[in-house]
Image (cartoon, rainbow, N blue to C red):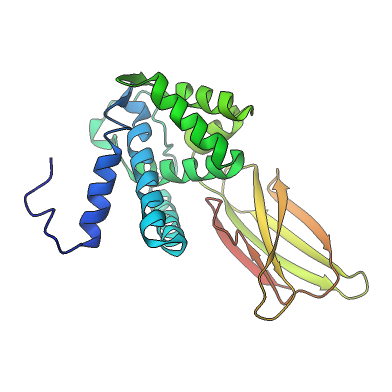
Length: 255
């Protein structure tokens, strides 16, 4: 239920977000309900991400990206004081800790990264299949993973384990350098958090002033990585995650 003041005709942004979030629960949380409180992200992460998707639909991509970045900051701040907290609880008994920034924002970010990894078509197919199969019933995180694997043809066990059951988030610190002799860009990266993550990282390389970056993808599978790119021109700028698709903190400088 909403309070009588929630719909005022003033198009208050906060209430737009709240009502969109709660409407999303009619599909995820109500029609499909998590089997156990440990999997509450199946309600809150879904409603949070679908609120962001509605924001993109109604206000544009920039507002969507701004919402993702704000959520990323919330997750980072929460983990500073709760470094050992995962998204999926392990037989939680303290009901005061059922929901948190992780079940909402990190759950949403997990869906965003999953969508990026398997593509829009497979993501939509998997979500629709999951909803249809568990309509007016209960589901677990494993049930959702199974539906997404069938839709995409990918083994998602490592992805779900890393982002939902493992604690923390990547903190990536690095620098880049350029060799005129080799016409080569060298990028050195280090994960500075306690946990080790594996992920695909987008690197934006701009070679023209005021130009758009060329996006290159690199696979990061260790705490320290060095990658090189052969280019025709010296870069004027290098950025990490230019399209906002990875849940991580970034610090990059030119050496």
